[in-house]
Image 1 (cartoon, rainbow, N blue to C red):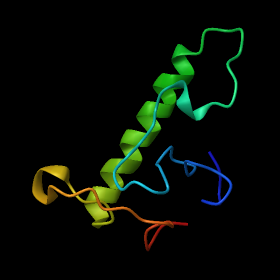
Image 2: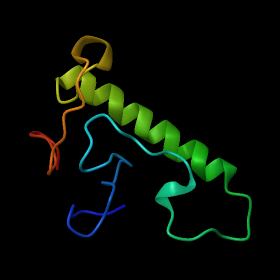
Image 3: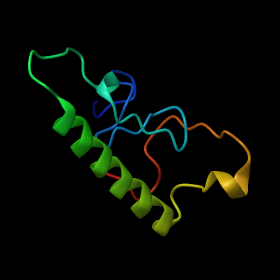
Length: 82
């Protein structure tokens, strides 16, 4: 996760910079794996990403796949996102 698409794959909401509507909410967002059970962390990341995805849909910043049928890409944060 990061703030710059040039140095990170995901933004702070675990959303891929280069693939519209792609949220990674498992251990893939972690650079390393700890020695503790991380299930609660992954559950929290998933809940946070789902909340953000719903907010994006409500604001019209994210397209619903059942209506588009295309895999649009983008290189930066959508308008209205910090």
